[in-house]
Picture 1: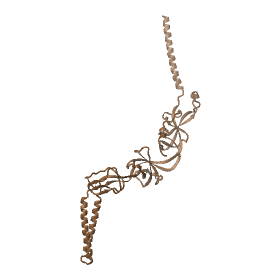
Picture 2: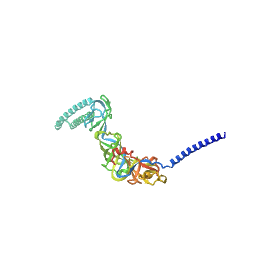
Picture 3: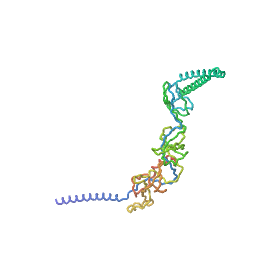
Picture 4: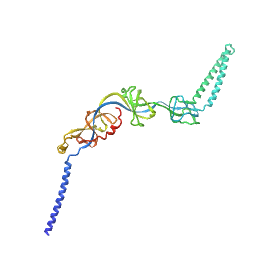
Length: 384
């Protein structure tokens, strides 16, 4: 019995020792993993470049036609004919809408008959007054009657001409708002007429920027309808008055409209190009970390590995040990995915452009293949 008890006790001791050995091996492995040097974090970098950078004044505006009106009638009448199709191009002086003018024509014929009679009586009186066959007052009355009849004829001709609405300039006419047989009152809109060959863009800039503006200054215009394209124009007018409520000044620029793709009323995102152009340090916008404490970048620099990692890096002695360093910078203009660095960075320094969210100052990194910027580099570049 004692042998059996000793055998069972020995078996329990062996099992406990085995379990203890396994637990010790697990703890030792975890300690080794914890003490082992962490692998470098892969990041993408870009070298800060010094390149020419043209200053620009951003603004938003609205496109308007160089000539654009809403065609209306000046006198009431019934539409007798519509002589255009919606959306077509028409020439200056082309009839657009005709109003019924039978009454005006009849009145004009009667007035012309009265004018003819008045002229005959006046001519007869002219020969009689010299012979004193009629009084001078009668002669003056007949003269006045002739002039009044002539004025009535001209008035009826003017009213008759207003029954025929003509295009005041060449352009594209819009959707018609009336049909044949409609009775229209004075001021009723018929259609819009826009000259789309040349457009204006009206925008506002702060009064502090007025000294930077000049006539014939170039601008770049972008519209949402044609993303990726920009249209060139030039400033043609600067309002000589600053708006009291906004302290802004209105500026107007003119731009060509080839193919008449741009339409009046479109929202315009534009930039005024300033003449000065100086080299600036430029980095991708993704390299900037914006915080309440300031803007910063992460620089990639060579460093000495810690003592615990020295043995692990002997096999990679040919490759430098890279760490990141946070540096606060002062940023300037942003355009086309790039930012101007005014202070805190020199040309040639490498900054992290992808993967910096998981980095801290002094973290060990490795430079990975640049993939994030491939799309930007292959995309058409915008002029700076």
